[in-house]
Structure formats: C-alpha cells, structure tokens
Image (cartoon, rainbow, N blue to C red; front, side, top):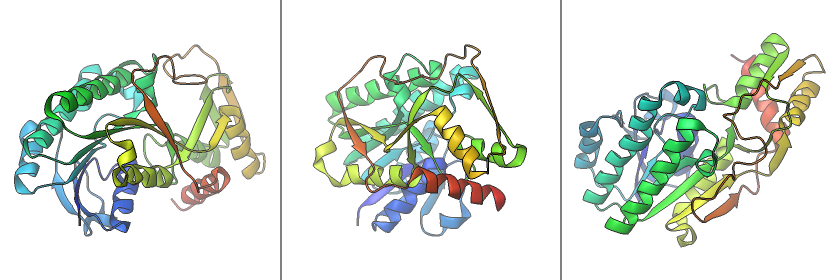
Length: 291
C-alpha cells in the first residue's frame, strides 16, 4: 500500500482527491490548516501551514512517503491580486519548502496542483505564482532528478460550499436572490469539470508512467459560454432568475482560452465517463436548498 501525503487535502479539490485515494486503497496523510470531520478518521492528519518551513519539515521527519501532492496555497484569483506577497509566500516559497523535503527524503513522485492561468497572461499574481512554481519544479527535476506531474486545473466545480467554487456560489445567489450578476459580456468560454471527475484524473496520473515529468491539463467535456451556463441555471429554476452582465473592462480572467503562450509541452486529460453538467447543477441546487 503506497503512502501518499496531500498538502491542502481538506480544501475544495483536496477533499475529493483524498476520498478518491482512499477508494483506491492508498494510505493517506493530510497536511492542512483546517480539518474535515467527515474523513478525519480515515486519514492521518497534521496541522501544517506551508509557509512555515519547520512545520513542513516535521511531517517528513515522522514518516516516509511514496507520493506527495501539493494542493495547498492561495487559490482565489481576486484575493491573490489584493495580497501579492502572501500569494508568493504560499504558492511559490511554500511549494519550495515541500520540494526540498521531497528531495531530502527521496519521494518517488511529486504532484503539483497548478492552474490554466499558468498558460496565460491573465490571472495577475495568481497566474505568475503558478507559472513560477511550475518552472521551479522543472528545475528541481533537472538538478535533483525529482519525478513530477504538474496538473493544470481549469473550471472545477461541485455541490460543496466553498469560497472558490464559482458555480456553487452562482447557483446559491440564483436560488436565494433570484439573480445572477456577472462581470463580463457572458461570451467567455470555459470547460467545466466536476471536482469528483478532476480527482479521479488526478489519481489516474500517478498510476501510469505516461504522465511522468509532464504538464497535464485536466478538463471536462462541458465547454460552454457563461451565458449558456446562466441560461441553463435559469431554466432549471423555472425562468425566475434575472441575469445581469456588466462588461466593465475587468481584465483578470481569460475570455476564450488561457493559451496566451505555452510555457511547456502538456498533455490534455478529459474525464470520461463524466458527471453531466445538468446533473451537477441539480446537485448544487439541492445542496443550496439543504443549507
């Protein structure tokens, strides 16, 4: 049974990743600043702020791990813009603390949760932090021969409440306030993937040599414009939702594609079978009603 350490394992995507690892019989340790009572008893847990080098090092001193995932750090684009130094400390320096320990303790594989914004000139400090970490990981591989997989996540959603869960928060406002407010003209295109599907793909990559030392784009099959998403939500809610699009020049999110430039070669991995978008929205609506 392989031993897996997941930094940020109780976060939005981390929750689904940990559950998938457990289903596949991995022995899981979670390092996070928060806890999760639902799965706390099924994993080993360490409180850890990745900005604290000693806290990171202490986890590796207690146990040897085969695989390490880093899903920790600042994930909210708008908050990252407001707090650039904190963003770099967590997303870049914190990641380096983890990389250092992986090298010292001869970890077999390091898996990094990056973002589509690493491929874009949008995303401000958040995108910069992800791209910087990707390049640093590549350098650790060159210098120390640390095997890696970099996962670039796009528009991930689920029915679980979370600050960065865009679709859930959108649905919640539509249900509670009968309105959707959007900064943009609504023609922005995204490929949505349910977090459970993203988690399955995130484990698939460690079970195949095909992804060794590569960047992998994780995406779903649900490619649609924001307006199409809004209309879908409105129809499910019996056309009772007012949709307001304000194209006010907000420039930090990409419009059609994140591919402003390609910093490194990557593979694309698509969930199949996948959780249907309509079913995913219904689960979000059900969760909001059950709050």
